[in-house]
Structures are given as structure tokens and as C-alpha cells.
Amino acid sequence: MKLLQRSLVARIIASLLAISGMALISITLTMAMSNSSRGDAAAINVAGSLRMNAYQIMGALQRLEYAPEETSEEQLASLVASFDQRLNGTTLQQTIPTDDRHERLRQLEKIQTYWQRTLRPTLQAPSSAAERDLDTLETMIVAMVNDIEVLVTYLEESTEAKVRLLGMMQVLFLVLIAIVVAIALYDVRYNLVVPLRQLMVLAREAAQRNFKPRSQLRGSDELALLGHTFNKMSAELATSYAALEDTVSRKKQELERSNQALRVMHDASRSLYGGGNDLCSSAAPMLRELEKLLDVGPIRLSLNDPFDQREMPVLETHSRTRPEYCRDQDCHACLIDPRPLELVAKNQSQCLLLPISVGDTLLGTLEVWYPQERLNDSTRRLLTMLADQLATAVYLQRRIEEQQHVTLINERTIIARELHDSLAQSLSYLKMQVARLERMQQKEATQEAQSAVFDELRNGLNSAYRQLRELLTTFRLKLEGPGLQFALRQTVDEFTQRMGATVELDYDVPPYLLNPNEEIHVLQIIREALANTHKHAQAHWAAVTVRFADAQLLVRIEDDGIGLEDDSSPPMHYGLVIIRDRANTLNGELSIANRPTGGTGIEIVFTPLTARLIQRQPSQAAADSHLGTGIS
Image (tube, rainbow, N blue to C red):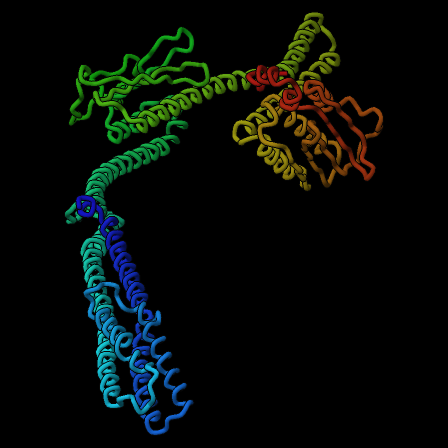
């Protein structure tokens, strides 16, 4: 019983077993009743045939009385034998119970006894037909027929009783099965269907993230246990989902805060990378915004001196004093605001120390103070990114300062070399001519001899003046323009106006291929060649080609003028001498010849320093790249 109370499945199985058992018992009893009723119809037929046989014997006696014949005797004997065989046959014996107290058995024994002892001996007595008492025999046969009627009645009543009993049994088992089915359906309805519907409703509510409904199932069966488990699961899911929503909300806030912090760092990157060495104006606003977003602070930035590795504080947010090496007394980026923040005492906060480094080079440190609570991973990653961004900015600023310093030295070296190679030599020559003129005056030389010296002085001064103007023009072009191409474009436009002819420019050189020294030499070669074309070639067209291919730079200046007198040996003009000297400085090959279509062509081919560095080993190229702007 306890199992049936605790288990719905056990009750359903018990109901099915009960229905099956009753159906089996009903079938078994029906089969037993059918087997017990087997032969009853045959017995009734035999009993009825005995009654008819008795009437036949009576008819045979009547015929024998009125027409005694031998055939009538034989017919009577045959009827008597048939009656005896049917009366004592197995058909009746099998259907009669063996109980001595049964009325059918007593009635059959009564008939058999009356037949064996009274009626049969009388019918088989060897007397003539006249001696037989027909009335007595008829009375005896009628009495036996009445007894047979009683036996037939008993047999019919027995068969009808069996049929009624079988019907009652069928009705009884149908009623019992209907009761069991009704009980099972009731149990299924209220203990299976209704709980399942309730659990389905709870499942749908849980699928819609509503964990408040609870199961109201009572009992100890499977569905009640499932309902209790579902209630527990809903409570746990509600707790877990609330915790998950809280975690998601916090993660969302962290992501939004991280996104805002990344946006602040991205927006500040332009001023940070392009603000020169003024970290106060570029980094301080970014650090202040990050403090508000990440709930940290104050932040202190210290840089190492590249010479003696001293740590120098350069920036600190919410500071009460200026940094020791502050260069702008009007700047208030580090000082506390007029409405100061409520700073956390250092004994109630912790410090995160981040290195400001590029590779193995330590540039400084970044101190970030935060409350006692542990920093989350996203904030720590953002602060690490901030340190990397500051390291990149500081490194780029130092590299820019070093490059500017090297560029300034290179520019001064180029100017000194240009002055030494051109104007200084001319002035030295003029100084020598002045000394010669002084000696001639001391010796009181003739006027004609002194006039020759004066002519040389005049020509030297004109040449020096021309060289000075060329140098000034060249340096203005270089300083005002963004590169060699811009300077060449200005040169072409200048000589187009001076010559009154078209000067074409074909420029195809990758950016930053030539160093400043090489750019000056190329520009001076082209200007000198165009100046010679303007003075001597009488040209109506000129072209300048500067191309880079196969790791070599090609510089070609062409015109359609009168050309050279001797193609194999060009004249040693002062301008051509300058061109040859600059070509030798570039380690290039110079060729000057007349063009087949007329005019002169000057061509210089050399390998730029950058191309030579690319062809070297990577380690050597990396070592020499710091000297890429040096003088060759």
C-alpha cells in the first residue's frame, strides 16, 4: 500500500494488472462454464429421444395388438433395444453429476431402475400379444415418459442456470473492470494530467524567465516529487539568474567604462603623439578623465633621465605642489581643482606601479593609487594599455628630439660643405688675387698688368655672387618645400620663366629614399645643368628626369640646343666641373654627350644610401640606420 501511495506508476501498473487479471479470470471462468456445459444439449436431445422412443414402443404395442405379425415383434424388440441403449448410454451419464444427492442423478437412476426392473422385463416377456395388457403397458410407459419429462426439465434448468451464471459473471467482471478503469482514469486525471499541465505551465513561465510561480502538488508520487524538485530548481534558477543579471550588468558597466576609457585614450592620442614634449597639456586631461571613469587616482608619471637614470616626476594629478622640474609656472594641470576631490588617504588605498618601457628600455614608471578593493582585470588591462601608450608617446618624443637634433646638425654640415666647396674656394681665390695685386703695387707694376688682376677679381666676385645666389635659392627651396619633388617643381617653373621655353619634369622616386645630403647634390646638379642650358645651349625645350629602378637613381637633363663642340671631351666649364665634383661625391657615374636628335644630355646614375643599406645584413643595416642622414 505504501508503494501505491508513493508511486503513480505503481498505481497505473496495478490498475492495468487488475484489469488484465479480471479479464483473464472472466475468460477462464467462461471457458470453464463452456466446458461444463459441453454435452448438455446432447443429453437434452437424448432425453427427448427417449420420450419419443417410449411413444414409439407404445405405438408398436398397439400395432402388435391389432396386427400381430413377426415384423411387429422385431420392430418392438428393436425399439426396446434402442431405448435401453440410449438410456444407459454415456451421453446422459456424462452430463449427470456423480453426487448421490443430486436430483438429476436420482431421477435418472429412478428411470433406469423402473426400466430395468419393471417396464423392460414386461415388454420382453415371451407371451403372445393377446396375453399382454395393453392398458397397463401404456400406463407404465406414460409414467416413465413423465419421469423422462422431469429429467428433461432438470437438464434444461441446469443448462439455463449455467447460462444465467455465465451472464452474471460477465456482468460482474464488466462492472469490476469499469470500476477499476474509472478509478484509474480518476487517478490519471487528478494525479497525472493536472500535475503535468501545471508543470507545463511552470516550464513555459521558466522559459520566459519568470521563476516566481511554484508547484502546488501534494503527495509523495513521482510528479509531486518532480514538482518539489521544480520548485527548488526554480528558486535556484531565480537566484542564479539574478546573480547572472547582476554579473552581466556589472560586466556591461565595465565594458561601457572600458569603451569610454578607450575612446578617451584614442581621442587623446593625437595630442599625446603630436604634442611635442609637453605632456602636461596632452596627457593630464586624459589622466583626469580616466580617473573619473575608472574610479582611481591620483596618478603620477615619472620619467628616467636617459643619462644618469634619475627618476624625475613630470606629472601628477590632484597634486598639492608643482613637480620639482616644472617648466611652466602658469600651468595648473597637476594642481588640485578649486573644488578638490575627496582624496583617499594612502593608508586606505593601494598603489599599482606600472613600467613605462619600450622593449628592454625602461623609460619611467606610472603610479596609480586605488581604494583597498581589488582592481578588476579590465581596469588593470586598461591601465596597462595606458602605460604602453605613454611609453610609446615618450619614446616617440625622444626619437623626434634626437632626429631633430641630428637633422639640424646635418643641415649645418651640408650648408658648411656647400659654402666650403663653392663660396669659400672663390673667396680664397679672390684673397690670393688681392695679395697678388698688393705685391704688384709694391713693385709698381704697369697699369696693364694690374688691369688683368682687376679683371680676375671682377670675374671672381661675379662668380662668388652667383654661387651665393644659387646657394640661397637652393636652401630656400629645400627649407620651404616638403621634399625634393617640390623643390624640383619650383626649379622647373623658375627656369621655364627664365628661358622662355618649356622645361618638363618626370619624377618617379619613392618618398624618403634620399637623405638631405643626396637631395642637395641632386638639386644642385639639376640647377647647374639648367643654368648651363640657359646660358650656352640656346634651347627651346628641356626635360628633367628623376627615376628610381633596380636600386639605382637615374638623373637625366636634356635639351634641344646647339650641343657640344666635341662629344668625346666636353669643355671644362666651371658649371660642368661642379657637376662632376658632386657626381663623384655621390659615387655616381656621369656621362655628358650630344643627343642623336640634337642638343645635350647629362646623365648621372648612383645608388642611394638607403638602397645600399637594404642590401646589407639586417644587423648592420639596423646599426647604420641611425646614421642614415649623415654626410657620405
